[in-house]
Length: 214
Ligand SMILES: Nc1ncnc2c1ncn2[C@@H]1O[C@H](COP(=O)(O)OP(=O)(O)OP(=O)(O)O)[C@@H](O)[C@H]1O
Ligand SMILES: O=P(O)(O)OC[C@H]1O[C@H](OP(=O)(O)OP(=O)(O)O)[C@H](O)[C@@H]1O
Image (cartoon, rainbow, N blue to C red; front, side, top):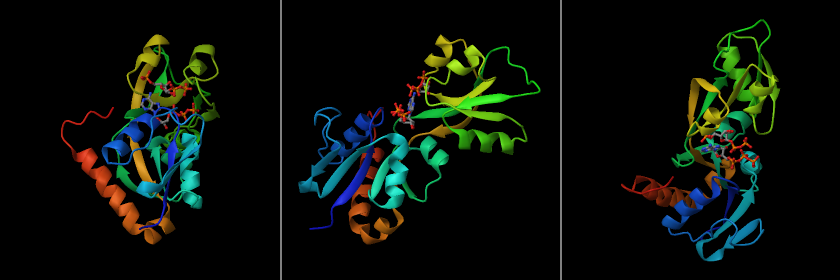
């Protein structure tokens, strides 16, 4: 019998997609809501324990080692810059990070950018040699250019529906996002067999042709 693997799972839109992947890999984690509001789900027969975390906190739990591994969007990894190993691209919750603005946007003297990702945005504009003021918001980012808080936003686009409904345009896509499997550096050495086994099982699911994981 191996050691128990603690897995930080993001609540919200990634959860059911990731849980479905685990089930395909033979690990019967329940769908969202089925275990009431419990935040820790044990699967002793599989030697695993799942911690249901806020997505942005997953890299923190993994860096501190209270979770051995975790599932998190590349957007959060790039924003949080936590010291974790990125082991697998799960290919789920696919979207992109983009610069967005009003259709008539013109560069002004003072440029303000609103975003949930201040580190990603600051880094991007610095690399472009553009001086902008970055304002952190926590959601409904598309509101900012509509009500005059910011000239542009840096946010995620999946279908483009939110932009369309709010009369905004995608000016530039800056990187692609999918969910990743990450590991704590010490756990990766100490629980290498367990982590490797899980990676192999997930890899087999990812590699299966015709599998519908959206
Ligand atoms: N529209 C989208 N389409 C596909 N994937 C998305 C989309 N929006 C976000 N994601 C991915 O899903 C992850 C989690 O998003 P989710 O909305 O569940 O959490 P959150 O943005 O942290 O929200 P909350 O603050 O409500 O917890 C994001 O970090 C990103 O990787
Ligand atoms: O291109 P679309 O398919 O419309 O998806 C993009 C939207 O999804 C995310 O928002 P979310 O639903 O997480 O809400 P939020 O505004 O609270 O972040 C993102 O911030 C966009 O607003």
